[in-house]
Image 1 (cartoon, rainbow, N blue to C red):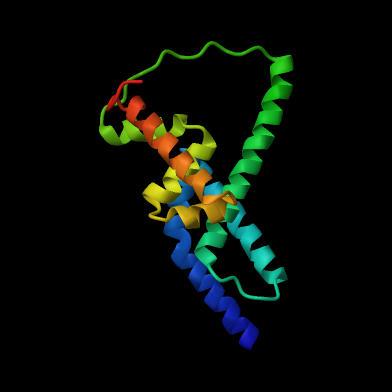
Image 2 (tube, rainbow, N blue to C red):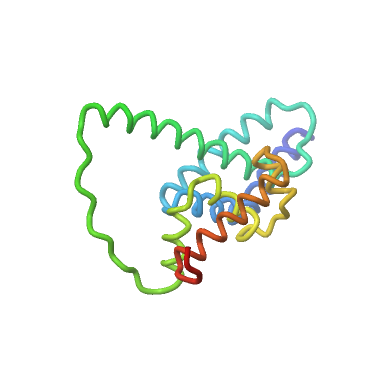
Length: 167
């Protein structure tokens, strides 16, 4: 009975984290559908790994965000391998002409999407998720100085992309 109550508590805690997890995944992926798939896969991995653990997790939110990050990067690596294989078989299609999107939110979303994944996740964790540099560094398993540098570079690239400063 105690195991069932603990399981219900864990599921309740995970359900409470869903908005944060979806927001982080959405910023990483750039699309709601991909973000939902990423969150679903990450939650399945989280539940499997938590079932196998003997001691409780201290910070479930950080654990889940790290799982989303790791799952996202695994997917990136898999897509790169697949693209490399396809590149050998199929030539690149011509890229469509760039279009301007109205509104600052869409401009920011586009600028975020164009950031390298490591910089994008850093600025999202610290800026959008409100985490400290230390918390974000722990999730990404890098030194705090590296996280600060990534956030700084991401902010500079965003400022240039949004026309706030010149390169």
